[in-house]
Structure formats: structure tokens, C-alpha cells
Figure 1: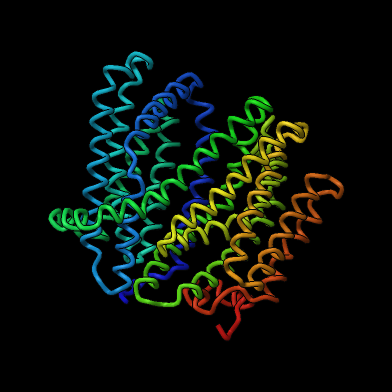
Figure 2 (figure 1 turned 120 degrees about the vertical axis):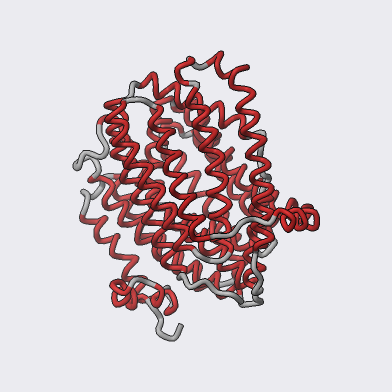
Amino acid sequence: MLRSNESAVSGILLGYIASVINYSLAVLYVIVLTRFISLEDYGYYNALLSIAGIISMFFPTLGIDWAIVREGAVKYGEGKDPLEHYSALFLISISITMAYVITLIIITPLYITSVIPERFIGIIYLYILYVIVSAFVNILSSYLWMIGRFATQSLGTLIGGMIFRISEIILIIMFKTVYVIITTMLIGQIFTALFYFYNVKKIPVLRQGIHILRRGFRRYFSTGIQVWILSYLGTISANISIYLIYMFLGPSYTGLYTTANNMVGAVTALTGSVINVFRSRLAHVYGSGGEVKNLLRDYVRATVFVTSLLSASAIAASPALPLIGIVAGDYVKAIPYGVALISLSTASSLSSLYINYLWVLERGWHALDIGVKSLAGYLVSLVILLTYAGSLGLYTVVIAGFIGSMIGLMIIFRELGASGIALETILLWIPSIASAYIYVSKNILWPIPQIILMLTPAVIGFLRKPLTASAIDQSPRIFREFLAMFTDKRS
């Protein structure tokens, strides 16, 4: 099995740091945006990109691209260079991108100019350039993922994101136009593409790409459609949730729900970073014939532990947001809902890991079955609660989310057959739920109980030792002594 010289932990940390920095700069962006860009102009900008986004729905990859990338990582685990998979990915991604781009070029003078003022039409052409560059970024990023260079992949995202956000803030102040937003998005992607290409230094071989697509297209479609359907259902579920909230509770609650979800993103960004690394590592181990269940166990225990720490800490810190001026006005009402939703993050991290585990191991239809049952439980519960207990407001979403999470967890715990992991997950989940409940109910004043409950996952981690010695070895040196407290030396 070939191995990258970049550690999994460094990739996770850099990926999470990139998300945190982007969130932080986005706060400054919102402050600048609301002062220098008119609401009408910003509305036209978003309407224009929404039209382009709707058109993009007619050009899906159906998960074929991810199926190619997954197999490329498995082949790398077997000791082979995934160049032919890189080439196949290039062919299919560029083909779909160019079809989409040509459609946008054709439809702009025929339709878009009739619904959007002419002075904004230049944005669509800048967006077209952004789409093309983004396609190359995704292809190069996928090759780095296939060969396990997670730190390089995350560093490229960090560099491009910082260039985008910083230049966006500065140029909005200077030029006061929505053209700055799409222009700086394009600049950020260009820098990311250049950074990735410098590190990849491989040109796709079209002949090899055509060969592998002819040989395995049906297999890629079968594997890819599974994860695509699950992703699509997740998107539909999110949109249905917003629609139901709007219909039952009104527009104000819709805005509060979106704000609360943004708060949750500060915690769940870690899970996304972990899953990015986990899928590649799992594919490598699977390809080399290694023990995949041990890898799953190690990632689940570590991710649930760290997510519980972040959740409890975020719940303790969230009420301070108005005090430091980050959240103001009516948006302050979103904080209790955000706190309640954050409390569900520990369970969702385990479910996400397990579903991705099944997909990499070519059990995608079973992963889809678990996801559908969990989503169905959530949506049915939400409709019932909104209909008969609408006075609970957005807490209906929290309760429905808890029900959906429990359905998924019960299936996963039964299949894992690991009572130790089940017990550990529940123990680490309880502090966040208790902390959120105490804050929301206002029975005890913030922040004393939240601070005590914030420390509880650390105590559980000290007793249960959820981290592995290899994870500590890959961590930055300054953290190793602290993290060693949560590590079983025998691992």
C-alpha cells in the first residue's frame, strides 16, 4: 500500500481551521455588506445566481465523479497510481461543466436579460468563469484526496478562502458593488487552482480516461447514484424543513432557523473535515485488505469525543454572542434555537461517519436505507409537531431532529454490535443535551451550569480514553502532552 507523507490529523485540523477562519471573516463580510451594498442590488445578485443554480440542476453528475474518485483511492491503497481515474474524472467533470456553461451562455440573452436589469448581466459571465475554474479545482482536489494528501488539500482551501474573503471585504469598501463578490470568488478559486496544480503536477491522459469510463461506466453509475440520491434527499429535506417552518410559523421563524443553522455549522464543520479524511483513509485500507472495522471504531470514538467537547463549549459560549456584538437585534432570538440544535451534533457525527463507511465499502444502498429511515422519521415528526404543537416554535425542529437522530443511532448501534461505543456515545451526548436544556428552560442562570457541563466530556474522555496513540503521534507537538491524557497507551 502506498502512503502519503501527510498525516490524517493535520488534514483534519487544517480543514477545520479553514472553516473557522471562513466563518470569522464571513462575520466581517456581513458587517461590510450591510453598510456598503444596497439590499436591492444584493437581491438582484442572489436572484441571478439562483437562476443559474436552478439551471445547474439539469446537469448533475449523478455521483459518477465520486464513484470514480472512490475507486481511485482504493487502487492507490493497492499500490497503484490513480492517474487513469484522475483522467476519467477530468473527462466527465469538464464535459458536464462545459455543457452547463454553454447553456448559460445561450440562455442569458434569451431569458435572464428579461428578468434581471441589464447592469447586472456581467455577473453571469464572471460566474461562468468561476464555474470553469471551480471544475479544475475540484478535479485537482480530488486527485490529492485519492493519494491521501489531506494537508495540502486543506491548505489550498484555506489559502483560496482567505484571499477571497479578505479581498472581498476590502474591495466592497472601495467599490461598493455586488460585482466585487463574484470577482473575488473567482480570484480565490484561481489561487486555489494554481496551488493545487503546483502540488499535483500531473496532466490527465485522455486516452486512459476514455478507457476506464468505457470499462466501468455502469459500475460507476450504480455506485455513484446511491450517494447522489442520499445527498439529494438531504438537500430536499432541508428545503422542505424551511418551507414547513415558513408555512406554519411565518417568515420571521424562517430567518431565525437559518441563523440558528449557521451557529450549528461552527461545530459540524469538524465532522465534514473528518469525513473528508476518513473516506480516503478507509478506501486505502479497504484496497490494501486491511481491517476496516478497527479504523471505523477509532474514527468514531475520536470524532464523537471531540464533537462533544466542541458542542458543549459552543453551547456555553453562544449566549455571549450578543454581548460582544456578533449577533444583534431580533437575531438574538435565534440563540436558544441554535443552542438546542448544536446539542444534536454529537449524534449526527457518528451517523455521518457510519453512512460514509458503508458507501466506501460498496454498501451504498444500505447506507441509503438508513438515511431514508432517519430523514423520514425527522420529517414525519416535524409535520406532526408543527400541526399539533406549533406553540413550541422552532423547538419542533429540535425535537424532530432528536427523533430522526435516535432512529439512525438505534440502527447503527445494532449493526455495530459494540455496546462500548454505544455507551460512550450516549455518555458524551448527555452533557450537550443537558446544557442546552438548562439554558433554554432558564431554570438556572447562565453560565455556571454550562461551564460545568462543558468540562464533563473531558472527564469522560479521561476515563474512557477514546483517542489512539497514532492520532497523538500525528498531532502538532504542542498538543501531544495534553491529548495523551485521553489516549490508551496500549493502542
